[in-house]
Length: 601
Image 1 (cartoon, helix red, strand yellow):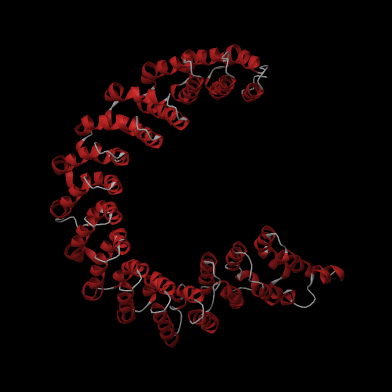
Image 2 (cartoon, helix red, strand yellow):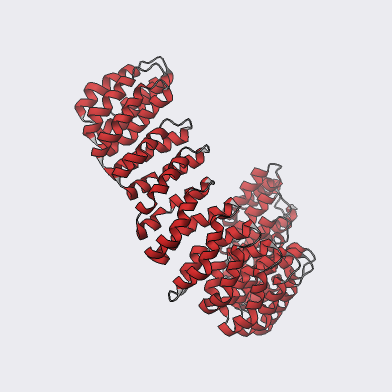
């Protein structure tokens, strides 16, 4: 193995004759032989430094052959090597010598681990750009051909990712050979190879001449789209987007649409799912005429598909589909051809489908306008606000701003309130957390009076929730509400309720008071902080629970910069000094930290 690095480069030789120039590669050989994977990994990550030390010629004649001969390591070491080599052109003497990097990367492109192969292909693609057209045909294209006709499927799958980078700069004769190799991989016996070819079909089509796309790529697309393996067929759907962008409307109708129609009704739900998932891209690629004639009927079928996953994927695309329709006649198309199917989905048996729809349905109100929203969409929103699934209700509430722009939120407020209350008290704490995050948005839309009357009590109840994450979110929510409604509102409505909690028998609730004061002090300003909040914090310094006392020290440190010098010296300093002598180590530590930060020593 060491022999590959050149004669006399054994570790002993380097140190024995005192030739320092040989030392880096000797150390590399030592480390690459080491049993510790981490050491080998570090050694590979230092390759560029070693190459710099060796110089370009010795990197080409010693380091690269050594690396090529030692490719049999752990996957993570090989992955690091594949990544390093992609940036090695400068270290081997520039573009004229880029071909020297191909042998180790070719070996890496054939290993069993997919991640390593993919990284090797990525590096090869990078290096291909640095080849001159002559060098590309002399060195890179033969590599692609060798990989494409390799015995193992691993090399053939890697080849699929390299055709598109070498094709544009090749001569016509070589281009024909490249296309031939790609064709044979599309009909390879191994499904993994056909899958790799299908995934690169669209990319390859983009660099081909239009005649070749029609005569060669379209038949390949048709074959792959009717492959026996659904994992190949679904990748053909993805390629369809790229191919459709290259063809005229007439060619599209004749060559691509029959296959796409077939995919939308495929027996495998995974293929239908892919059509639903790529629907917006397909719609843009085929243009408005084919969308109306072909895609809308296909979309209707996907919205009532027997598999919930397909219906959910289609539901996610409802808003995008409607937005991408031509503005002329859009309203009629939505009302007649899409809305009836949406109404069905509102009461779907699967919660993921209903949730997917709820996340986009509000966006239709801006497209359909005020009257249609009130007449047709509002009943759907109200039904979703009463849905038994919390995610559905949450998705509606989180998108209320769309409706607010069109019809105003008052239309919804009567149904909104019970839904918010239910979510606020949901057994799952993550649901409660999500509704807290929307509270400032709701508050801004509903206005201060409605908020005080209906929602204020909820916000205060969250402060004493049994889950800490909820109490924490509720504290930050109060700060955002004060920023929205102003300090006067805070002084009259929020601060008194927060300060009452300072006497709560539960120490966790007493601590929440301190957290609220930390958050509110900045929003409320000096006067309210000094007059209303500071006395409570100072009083809590005598709490019998050490956790409360050290949080008092932290709170004083936080609100200190807001207070004036008199309050700091006369009120805060004595309390912190007393806490600095506390029997509890943590209390003492945080008190002393506060003294030093506030410069009260």
